[in-house]
Length: 203
Image 1: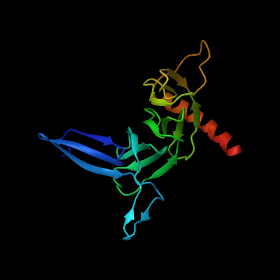
Image 2: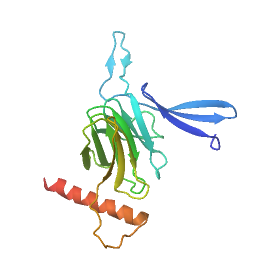
Image 3: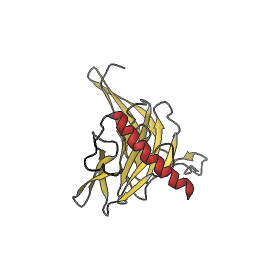
Image 4: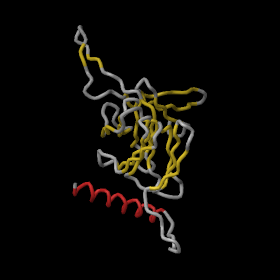
């Protein structure tokens, strides 16, 4: 089935599903079920009942093929692997309301962002459990997208009909020669993340 067309879906039933078109038939396989951690209970007959997390958004890593993120209605983000269907690699207590979008940075392999109905956009280093940057946009944020030309620029759309173009790094000085390319974008975001990490370790 490697050479067939396929896609993935996420749903409020807690399932991440891989769909493959084989000849004229659509075949599906569950990749993972979003069970809320610490929510297992037993009914009167001794059967275990799991509370299911409601998936709202997901994004696959651009370089690490098996790695993906899933946002939920409960405000959590799960870091998952296509190789492990019974457990999460990590859990982020990301937002106070539903996660509406998650997106890996196209330049920096450790960085992703999320947005939520709680009015915030958060930028994360996936190896750290707390966000590196938080932006409050004063309205529920429906979607976010990284700029294709920069590791530090992104757009956000809010439910009040506004779109915002935001930048996490200081602007270049007038007359300064602007360097370009993927290596420059990675270095720019690395420098910014290191500054934030230094401040967090001092406090």
